[in-house]
Image (cartoon, rainbow, N blue to C red; front, side, top):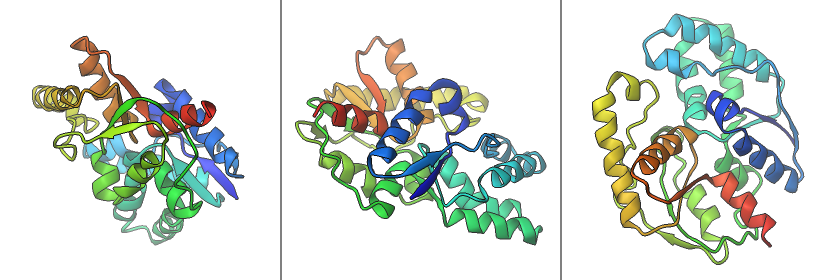
Length: 243
């Protein structure tokens, strides 16, 4: 099975190890992974800020980069959600580009979604002997409907105590440009989220979007809380290595 890695801007620039974990896990299940070098931003920051013409320019480049891929897998529900839900809107008046976008939507998956739905893998035989809590990102959960897949994967990790995060479906306050435009509100939201994380007594916070995790980790670090923050792919890969 041939898979193209859609790394996303945030992972590429700040968390490349997350992409490496995704690739190594996909290799483990027989996937041939490539990295289209033409890929840039998916256009979400511009789109969310109201710059639709600029977002279209970037989205066309993203489509060119992946149009020949069999499957596209990303460690971000947010960026995957952008492609699935907003590309048709961006190209509503451009039939040729809309057709290309819709073809790619059928082949584009968030990481946990791809493992469970396409590869049929829910038990990686991983072992991770820590107390863990899980934060679901808004876009993965609400735009893509990715709710059970991460929990299914985590539920099979041996030796791990998975504890519920209070009000886990509440936003962490990041929201991309929202955190810049509405900084005070964003800070209040992440303070509340961090407090809920701490209340679980977990050693590790895991999630599927580095935007959310970066935001929460920043707050936890500022408060001096020694809670490790990991992407799901990192945790699973570390768990596989420990076996």
